[in-house]
Length: 176
Image (cartoon, rainbow, N blue to C red):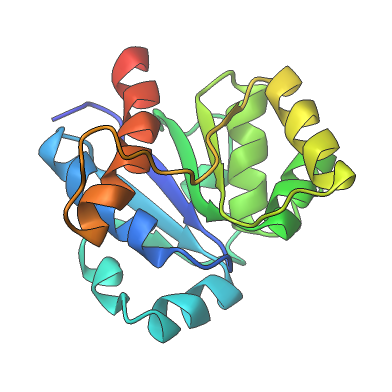
């Protein structure tokens, strides 16, 4: 088991399966995971029938709790993954608005030089989306679009989602 937990942010973009598979594979790799979900993210999880996500993590932080540990640089988190990441959340992270706990926790990861992995699920990308991604990359974030690959001939939707999730986990495995 890794000493410090990883934060998982879930936003309102479609693709709850990515978060579900992240929680499953992170556990297999010995990571404790704490969750921050936007209000729309909660609705999407229910719509996509992935409510089991909420049972598979150590702790769920309220989106409006700015006194929660993820809101401060003194917290002991390995880093944060936001998947799926809506373009609205990505834009707020790029702007540093810190208007909810998810955006603040991402900002803390950047300022503390901890891994921040953003997995945008929306497409196509507008010029604004690309500029925000470039801005975040320059600030130290890793951008991994939810673009699964087929090299290993996945047979299930879970195996297909895992091709993206494994790239996300690799960032944290390389950081420990």
